[in-house]
Length: 473
Length: 162
Image (cartoon, rainbow over all chains, first blue to last red; front, side, top):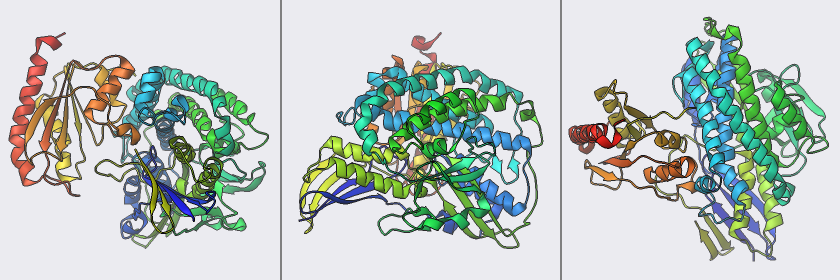
């Protein structure tokens, strides 16, 4: 008799999803799926809106990474306008995106995943959360809060709002930067460096305790994709995409936003509202790939900042070629946070940052435009078509979570097959299967509110619908 | 970042696009105008209370949390004391209740405000629209009065004078 285990909702994620694990008559795992159970509809209801409204509209997709949507959307609009934005505007946007990356990575690492890393996968779920971290290692909790505030405060200083700023517009940004804000940001840097150092040192001490998880947390060969600069250093706001294979060879290079759909396709599965992106020449699902911090570090030859470059060299020692286990997304996030702080310092020390020319203007010069940026959790692509009046006729968003979707599903299956034996599971096993998804830090739908308490429920159901076992927490 | 100190911190929560849920931010904006220029008072308004606010709480001698209450009589205005306590929000992603936030503050920073009060306004409707239901709209004068009295008491209390 076959059985299904359901984890619904999966906890400590950005948004709400569920996991089902299908067992055969011998209690062995046959299949597993990660389901995204929400539908948003942004692409459809933006139709008919003026293109210049798109950045602010699209930023509402997400409450954690709205900056990436702002930037990818603005870049798509600038393709429609056929303008190049002023240097200072590009630098300010770069800083905004890095600040968002720091605060988002801090949320993922400290608030969502550090309970597993500090207290253990088998720890009592009653203490396996941020309160448990605060009680066990308050300095770690304070470091996480400090890094979150660092990123959020920079976003607020630049865009006047911590979330959903309207400061990024097609053509640049609405307001130039000021010396007073620059000096305030510079004063925040020493604490940010101290906090990321503390986290990095701590992670390196405990990572060795997770060798079994490293082995089975989405640890398999795949393609990796991310933005890269011309000098092959990591990029977040400009640059072109590079796709490498599991041995590190370049499969496709110089993919700018206009070429994206030529190279990347989207498949649909009946069990999820999130699509499954793939590299077209290999087809689906063979052409599935991973994006985000792990992919970016696998692709980049350098971080372009001295401290992060040392960390990247150490990271690349983890494997002969690309690092394949998704457990190392945690490590990669720390390296990227360090890089973000360093790069922000460099931008703040650029004298041109106070230039007053921060916006280019133009009307509709092309009827189609695409833009891309790196969100904290991976590549983000916006693609629009407009009519002669600049009203949106069609829009498509390819988000990072869709690009990681197949890898997340394969990872859930890999972990479930390893841990679930004879149809039996424990709370710790349940948590490990969830933790595979957490390594990717998927962003399902942060801006959707839910009322009331959302329990985590795991049920074991027979083929005739009989509930054989149930765990609720 | 340096912890910002305050004799009284107003910490409001709510979504202005969800009808009565927006009464917390509305009252926070009112307090900011009413007590404008009062250096001993800080006002913070958020859609959700997140762990980062623990640092603000650690620097406050007293706090007034403001939120709507979905399970109270619509339009009722109540002030109650809040004690640190752990709930189940740790399982969720980023939103905390007042008691949990106080608890986290104490764990992380070894201190929390001496006085912690929760001002609630009973909600009638949490639909997707701006503005308030009739019950909450009618309760606003009482909410202003209670908030003003509460904040004045905390600001003038000898316990919190420098």
